[in-house]
Image 1 (spheres, one colour):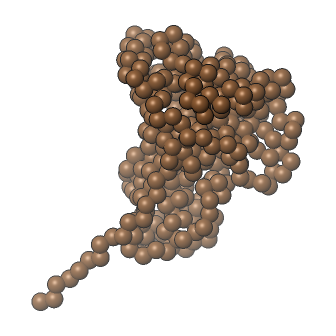
Image 2 (cartoon, rainbow, N blue to C red):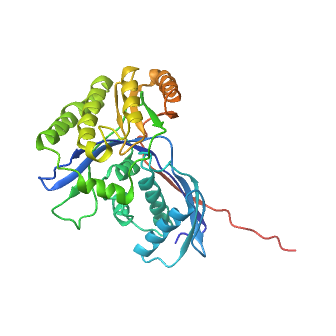
Image 3 (cartoon, one colour):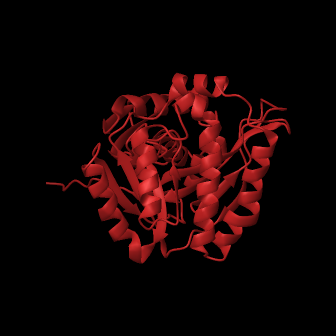
Length: 331
């Protein structure tokens, strides 16, 4: 253990832009697209301690995560963790993965454990469906991940196969309507089990839209074509999840908010994971106006909150700070 230091970790949140393959006939399942955004965040600090203690936000969950990590690496010493900020859970913003990886990254730095974020995600059991959260934690920007290897279930890590920086002049208007929270844990697992396989033709459309429209538009900073591709991908994926969530999107308010943003300045829009968070991509100069209009729309309907976020092209910030040693004056 590194003595007399404190490890600081700040993570981005993530927006899930869609899954790629819900068929799996090529030997991989899921795969996904996602982007890191600069807030909300997980922020925590960790340091050596005689006992395992957690203060601040999400104390019980964080203690369980820390205990899992310590057990997995057979570490006998303990840590004290202060959780200063968390991402709202079950909203579609990647709260679980970001907190788990923040805890794992902090403790691994304290004990000089050499493990990549992808290896840490496997240890923390964050690779059940998506590697997007791990990818944005590790690298920021927009990531495309390859999904689970069905032919080798013992291969726990999910590789990122493409990462591109996101244009600094674009923004996401993120709306969280007062609607039902997204599926999580066992409910999410059951939903995936019951989903029918996506037709190969639909998988092909997503792949073509990703490779030949969304990613090139991102590289060329063409927000119109990026937004069109994003919306089309979201429509295909949403229809594939209709059985699990009762429609293309998780609720009527989510669907209505997406439609509203598309009609009021968003170049593309969709739902992040199981929602209820939805988002529109806009030029920076138009973000405030779209935010105001969307907030007014929610206020006049189900209520909710709207924020403007930039993409985070850095990923998690991890710093090791030396603590000042106590000094005693002799009489």
